[in-house]
Image (cartoon, rainbow, N blue to C red; front, side, top):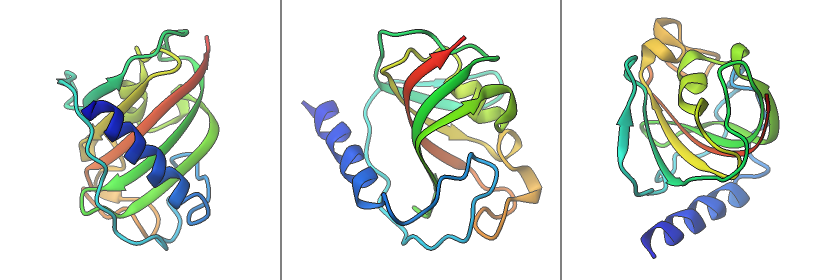
Length: 152
């Protein structure tokens, strides 16, 4: 029941901010015109990869599995740890080799139809350079990702 409530909260947040930010393909975070939000609560066991990327998976999909070289169709919201919504992708097609390392690492192994929260340390995100006017130097990134489909 908790997972269902969390997923509903995540869906509501996506609808609420559907017009606030442009899709940016994870590489052009834009101008941070959205307010700071309470990041939706998701439940699940946290997995930490060898590179320090953490993820939890409140909904495991049952479709094709994303590989490091996959082109994937996703929806996502990207937050800074203070709740700033800096990225939003509504039905975005991404080539995993072309995205930040932590996003790629967190999506690999997901099955289509699944949802994951990625917590990406600075070294696997935009590092000390930050990105645009919204992602500061050394920022930890949080992405809620829904893997709609994967082309292997």
